[in-house]
Image (cartoon, rainbow, N blue to C red; front, side, top):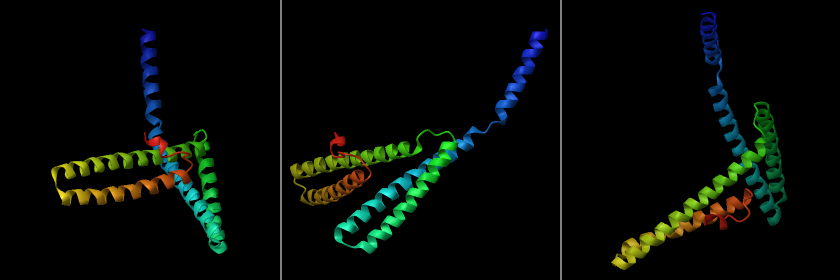
Length: 168
């Protein structure tokens, strides 16, 4: 009887202990902080690329301004990483960079599949003899190619080595 009573008391204590923990609040803040870190990583990559383009054009004033903003973004990245490390995230900067690269590759794959469907729609419109639909599909193909090129450029900027090869 003592064992049964002791077991009941332990079950009540463990239930009370688990009820007091709040893991969901920290998980949501961790997600928000990782999202902020990903945005900072993208902003840093963009400003660094803009500074490089300004240097290539010979516009040193714009390049210095872009470099200053990039340094501020880098400081934000380090601060966010320190906060995330204190919360228990291992290598938050590398994780954020990997997530950014994965998102870039996913965007490229989505654009490539959309381009394939637009080409197929154009071919069917041509076979059916629907000139207006074929022309509309050609415009959609042109816009999708432009979007694909922009996404490939962004992916290269974010560190994806061969983004066009990742589509397959």
